[in-house]
Picture 1 (tube, chains in turn purple, cyan):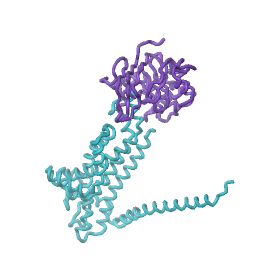
Picture 2 (cartoon, helix red, strand yellow):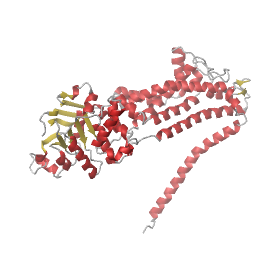
Picture 3 (cartoon, chains in turn blue, cyan):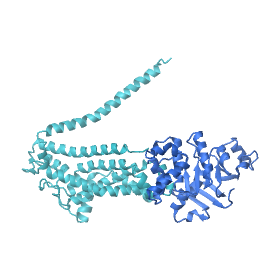
Picture 4 (cartoon, chains in turn red, yellow):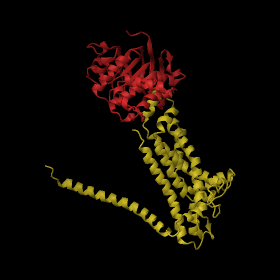
Length: 254
Length: 294
């Protein structure tokens, strides 16, 4: 079911902010069209990892990394067109960020910045993405009202629609359900199960159960090191390879 | 059940005492302002008319109107803003959006803050040295406007930076994440959401530029100069001009036997110009804040 060619390859990745190292040389691969779960307590370097992959880390003063990150075999640090790289990766942040624009413009933003001008094709993209994010039915009659007026859960789905609007091949969800209710979370999870046909999904989550429900493989990241990386059945079983994984998954610590 | 203890009553007494104190202080601030405005208008009432605005001073400035200084002030303010606004806004965008933390940017930021605190007389001397003498522009509207621009620039940079910084960082990250460049992000998201703050900062500098006497006195404003009445283009860029602030200084201290009403009338017009611009700033802010979208 899952094709066995890596979509993202990470080798010996060390990442630090100034003197403070947050990732201590981790290596792993993310396969094409899998849902890759990353679990681990706060401060274990999950968000920094995502920001290194789409190179938004470089907006943070003092952030550096060594080692290699490849997307489709290409070293991200050497990518000439960084904007193209970022468009290849859809990023959803923990707290919904509705841009202070209309719902329509929120989703149309990325295609427009990418140079698409025809109203017709933008209309199509907006509708497709809002449908994919399970938001279309709720907002189709008020596309030209402000995105920031939506409820928290709707805004998070708007954020997902925006992340899909530039047709990414990789979708990174960074604790996307932190600000939304369980019912909406379930709806988005359904959406993710469909999206995996078309893209690779990285699911960073604090909710152990969510990773168990969705992820094909799960990586347990703790204080900048990979404790364990295996198929989710193993990670969430009664006998993962590491005792620490068992303890974390079962709420004994963290 | 809800009975007040002694301690609660003491707190309530304290609460109302504080409230009265604060109210009194506020009234003390507002009262002088109202008195000044009322007194000025009262004393200037006999002379205020359209002719007063549109006639040159005559009879050694002891009668006539204030056309020449009024037009001079308008020229000085507009030209100085035309210079300072783009430079200030772009510099602030660079400092807030592009520059990285380094000793260089720290020095620049420190310089901006300190320049904002330099007294206007020092700016005046700088303008005299740099523009009038060194650059050879001579005493002129251009030199005076440049001096006013230098004076207002640091405050415009500071207020613009503040307005930009008020736009949540998460908006920028959201834009970068979808592959927008820095400038696309600034142009489409940051600027539309900070423009009200930026413009307010700029317009508040108008009143400063209009009111300052020292910088223009050294660099381009003259004691007396008659110009064609009714012609808004009566001054050239390299002409010297009259200015309201300096005119007020002249007729109240340098020229004997000026009728009171004339002096007060000039003060009213100067105040009017400043208040007009401030009111504009407030209106603009209300209008643009209504559009603020988060």
